[in-house]
Length: 231
Image (cartoon, rainbow, N blue to C red; front, side, top):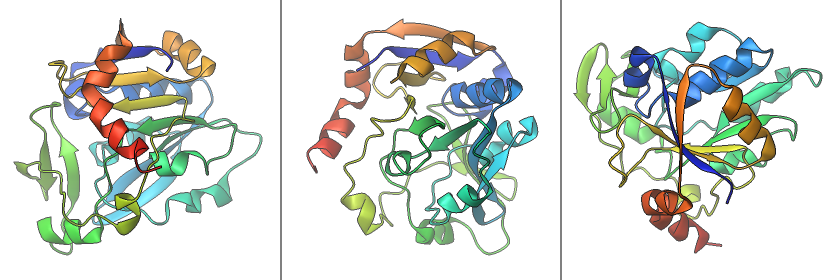
């Protein structure tokens, strides 16, 4: 395991809106500012879509917060990839190894992405959905502007997710919530490559604190152990 940090945006609004400290949004914004293009997944009303963007408005939009729904079309963006352009992609563990090798990969710690039935349960056709926003331990779902308590669905688990053993070990960054550490509004960040260590020191508008590997295991160990036992 490489180095582990707690990180969060210096911008209070970003930190509150992004649910887990805002590290991912600030990392994307920094890399876009130095010439990268960002691959992000967002909600567009009831549609989930993965786009390539260099627009800071897309990165800081609440619709590109965690999207708790399957996106079977995630890799469609690859048809528009320029082999001479640098990219940073936010992805799930099952997507890491299918991305081009030259991409910087920010992998989200993942339990599962619910099937479309979850969306149909919480909203009806035509309603705009923001699955999760607010601070880490008090986040909520917004449906057509109305705040509702956020509850991650353990129902509607796709079969492939039930069998998944992927943890994103080949990603540059592995990011998630700080469960069990009593550190709300911070992102748990594992720098998993030399390039991620270097980038972390260059990303503007974040505060970072190195923490022991044992804290990562305390926060996420059971999840990783469960996944690894499926191999």
